[in-house]
Image 1 (tube, rainbow, N blue to C red):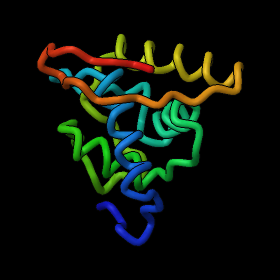
Image 2: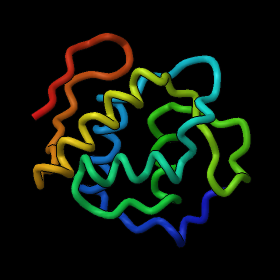
Image 3: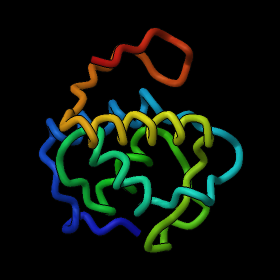
Length: 118
């Protein structure tokens, strides 16, 4: 269960995180057990350049259409491909090492339409 009182992001910051999720992560049928929400939130923080709570991460993943098999878990896993997570990990490491944060403009979604990373 997501504790709404634990969510911390402004609507603008929520939009940036959601854009990072939809630009890099790709849904799949099975759960990715290698990157539960707590591990994923750290990757997202490095990309967007600000703190993302675990509760925010879980909430925004669900809002972006990802599913989990147990929302009552403290750190649930989501149905995201490893390739997408590896891409997010690479970008997050690059941003962190170079003191950068991405401002991601949404142009598309998981349907194969155009996406832009700036």
